[in-house]
Image (tube, rainbow, N blue to C red; front, side, top):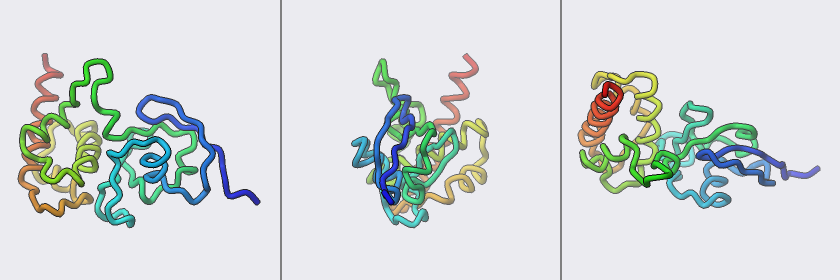
Length: 164
């Protein structure tokens, strides 16, 4: 019995078809097959959130998801947020830069993808709601205040742009 499976999925708007080992994680598929290095693998147990991506619009841990489970799905990684035409960063990415939420940067893609989901569902989160949403992402630099500031700034900018 073959352990290889053919999968078809869309990543950041681009369709892919690949034959993969059935046990290949989605994080390894994204990083090694598609060469998108923004999805980081930290703990490999789903605890740290560094590998957070969106699968069909909902956040998921790429280290806990097999690539074959994503067959037919639409995946968004941190690379997919930048404006393709202008190269401009997504407002959430820019807010993390401006409010110093990047720190060492290892956990940042996971925080940004979780923030994207949060602000999509709740454009005006309270501090407690932000903390609750980001509770599954760990920052080893322990600079959570800057991350909280970044999410608030992103929400403000997105809401201002939406109102214009």
